[in-house]
Image 1: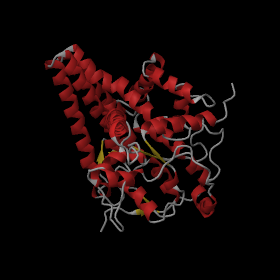
Image 2 (image 1 turned 90 degrees about the vertical axis):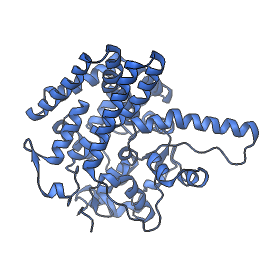
Image 3 (image 1 turned 120 degrees about the vertical axis):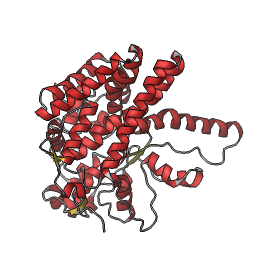
Image 4 (image 1 turned 180 degrees about the vertical axis):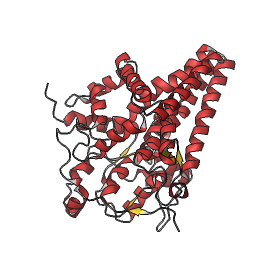
Length: 421
């Protein structure tokens, strides 16, 4: 017997429009692709579980059950990984020669950024939906409170305090607007406004967006805006208990500078929590949705669905039948992209909940009852497709590879109408 319950599809937009789903336009997609996961299964000598976990695109056996994982255990494992990666980086920077120390710190930073980002995009995000523990979970049913907060909300606040990012109360208000079809991806959506503030106004060329993206890696303005917003949400607008968490988190991080060489503290603590965090976030938010497509929100659930998609790590395999130098070149380029683009993006930026993020938006609107279990979201997305419950055609909106997803997001933004001055 599963220990979660179902929640019915919300009334309103979804209830009004689900009957029109078969009228969904089937225009030619820009960069969507099918069959890549199946090709990986056929041609790569890797386990299905490994490919599932890395890519975010699952292959399920007919009738295969999707078992929920324990949310608290996942939370603890991620923070253990964060601590281990931070300690390893600090030790390498303290005891190794400079070149190998920096190489080790760079690798460890990728492993730090995954949990740091998940503290907001997963744990804080699900807590803002009141879904940290699914309905029916024993820790939710017991109505445990900590510092006057339900346990799930407390863990969301704790997670965001560790990363020193937006507090739960601020995030909840902004995220409610993000989900609202009337404001989704418009200037009333805080996420869309962040994209605009980062220099990505609609109507420019794809090349201009790429230049802006790389400039933001070193832009003082971009990083200053991020730091100011984070400081305000942690130490100004947060509730008192959350401010105490933020003070403790900052104190621990700052105090490490007293026991570590300065260069080790900078590269093991300061850089991942600031510069690295901002770049990892930018590298996924730009390709997460079709931003700023119109001044108004989506008028139908089909239009809402068109503004989101699935993103999967991995690029198409080289064509079959190559020989000699062509074979060596094709597979070398594929391995380079997988090792130096896809793997870092997967580790630092595209966590599984973000790969299947379209399902998080669309599951609310049916056709089946909503299941508030984020631990199985990628597998349940595929299960819905396999069972014919993919009412809004997620199967036709799947992007493979980070560069492809970035170009797709930039193409959508380029085609959007320019904003009035």
